Length: 100
Image 1 (cartoon, one colour):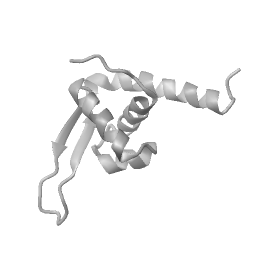
Image 2: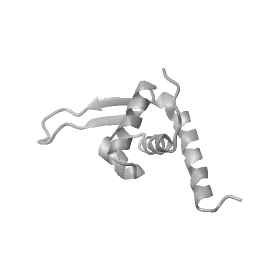
Image 3: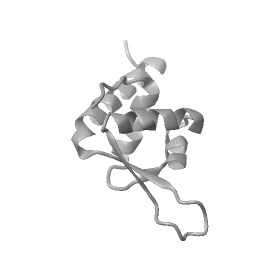
């Protein structure tokens, strides 16, 4: 397993995956939840996959559209995602002037 750099984008994606931990998301949903463009989301997802933080699986064909690749946070990485989310909350407080 690789060491994972927790950039702001990585933290946002981990937070979205943790919030949706009871279901799987697909890439487009993650772009909408985080506001991060697809061209930047997919490289982060690749790094998360190589680090073992996420599981990915293809949707079964037959829905009349191209199959989606569903993504879920590995339960073993919940703690990391919680810490990453806390970092985002603190960063948001700083940006919005709530921190002293």
